[in-house]
Image (cartoon, rainbow, N blue to C red; front, side, top):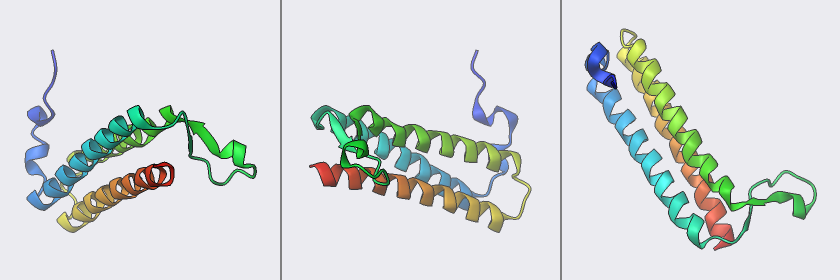
Length: 121
């Protein structure tokens, strides 16, 4: 039997501005997942992921690494949603800043994914 996220009543105490930022973060996670999934089927077998390695051959990784971005994005979103719902009694400004930084982390991951796609497309 699944327990609903709102069954504890914590989510209802979170300010609406924070909920909007977390919803935007969730949509960015979905967008990252869709882009990675679509590009996976048209991508070449090896993609340039590891730019800091000294040899060009070492910078390439298999295209399955594309799913690192959606998985990381999902875990960041889920973790931050749980943290915000637990600490809902903090100042609304702090919660809003935390939720905004969650959305910004999603944007940075989406841009990193798009950079890899644009380099190889």
